[in-house]
Figure 1 (cartoon, rainbow, N blue to C red):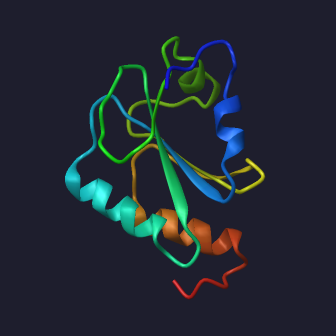
Figure 2: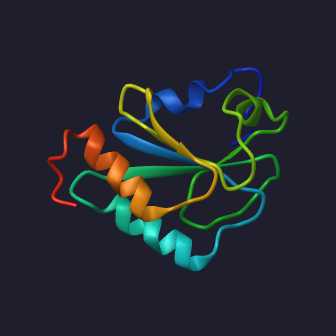
Length: 116
């Protein structure tokens, strides 16, 4: 779904925790498998891939940031990951995807009640 002049309004329709992963190429199968497990956890984190290029990643939503506005707004370079709370507040940001750090940040956001 290309992003035009609507800013990041496309993100507002999702309820729950969300990860924004800025990519410049389709992610590896290993990384996608880890994110799939995170989506199926007790407290799911849904991932939205954001790319300036039109990417086809079967089974994953890809937001095409045609003008680079999302990347600029979030100071994102390829592989940057943001974890967002359900109210769209930023929980944490990393310059590379690290599942252990993402899970630890999620646990902190939940008050440490995840059993992770």
